[in-house]
Length: 449
Ligand code: 2IT
Image 1 (cartoon, helix red, strand yellow):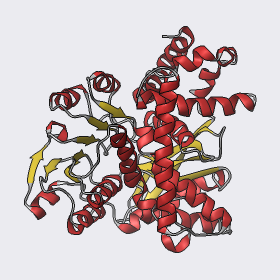
Image 2 (cartoon, rainbow, N blue to C red; image 1 turned 45 degrees about the vertical axis):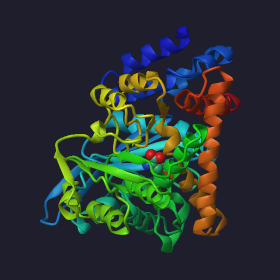
Image 3 (cartoon, rainbow, N blue to C red; image 1 turned 60 degrees about the vertical axis):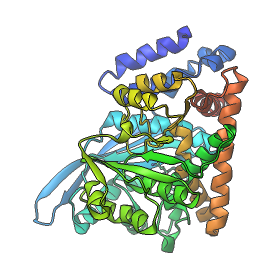
């Protein structure tokens, strides 16, 4: 590897030895950018990479809230404004017990390049809290969100930093956060958050966007291989918003999602999550707060495998759509042994770096990276911001068409970036290169800082 990249990587490893996810994502991005660094000696001269791996700003805040029995709890709130070179910081909030600086920073770093790929003016940011929403009442969620926003509202705004949802933060939480922001600011600024409800400035198709976008991207990959999605089986993970969107779009196009997973195990439904009843049930399961996928097996009489991951199931397409590092070496070996041709990452960094490198080496396997595949979510958030600032509202068809076009462009741009450096049809390297180049050029033109 290029000596400069190596030295920055060593620096990151030393400085952040307690932040494994962050180190992992830096290593993953840096593994692709050697040809760009070689072609641009001015980047090393300006020490661009050491600047790029340091968030512009990151802060924590106290979030204190009262439970329904009058007991008090204190959580840590985070916001990382990673890179604002190409637009206001933009990225979701994750509420999950395991949230820590490493997770927030890895997500913020990924978000920076992902947002660049959308072609929209959005910088990279991420935030959240170690608050665990599981089993909390609606009133507890409301009080937590109000307290969270009370601490955060001074530091965000439609032209400053625009949070949205991520795991544990959906339409309900965004509503409560927006209500509190409005109350504190005394102005109506819908562009401060995305993923809002339809009655107060939310964009049509935003709930579907990540899953739909992932399937549109998949379609481009299949077209490249002269195949179509119709009749294909897809192994997914999770049962949240993203997996719901994939199941819905896949069913519309004649394909079927055959696995779902949760912290309790996975289900295998050979008929597919294809009927409206089954697809809607994912939303119901998520809303129940039980965080159990076994409920699906019980309701529809399909197999449930306790404590296991779905990656041993033979399917045409694998779409890990749950969380980071869900696919480790052991699962990757099963996927390869099954002769799977399409490995399409969806969740942020769902594959460990060794497993990803292993899968990319399998003859005939096509690997697509999450920062491109799931970019439709934040892409439609960008469209929501445009609609808010222009005070207009596009129809579902208009948003869906723009999403479709965006995903095609991201795929084509990635394929072209890889081809330009003689890397063949390498979507992982292509996405890293295309995203990196855009952010790098913007930073250089602005005097780096
Ligand atoms: O990971 C992601 O891209 C998101 N959670 C969505 C971010 C957004 O601002 O819509």
